[in-house]
Length: 127
Image (cartoon, rainbow, N blue to C red; front, side, top):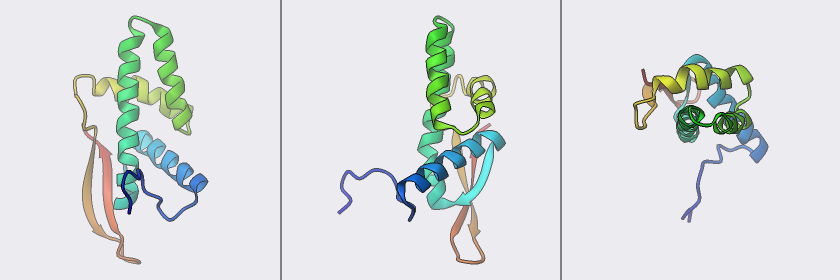
């Protein structure tokens, strides 16, 4: 039974799974959309949403206390691979969703992959 077991293992060891999730989230923020399998998209969707919320709160807290924004940036940098993506998250992506209470990503089904019939989706940031 899988009661209270969070996350998907994606048939990978822990280090590989962590690196895969980190890379997918980084590329989602870099390009605005990624084409991947439905299982991988579901696995990273929550992390992406939480990082946008972290950036939004960091920007709002940074208006009164710059140290809080710095703390939020460091937390985001620990979860993303690229410092330029962290910069883009705080300067471009988070301000775009300033008035939105959640739901920053959307999943569009594209069909199945030809080789193994895996369901493919387009995970993108909502405009």
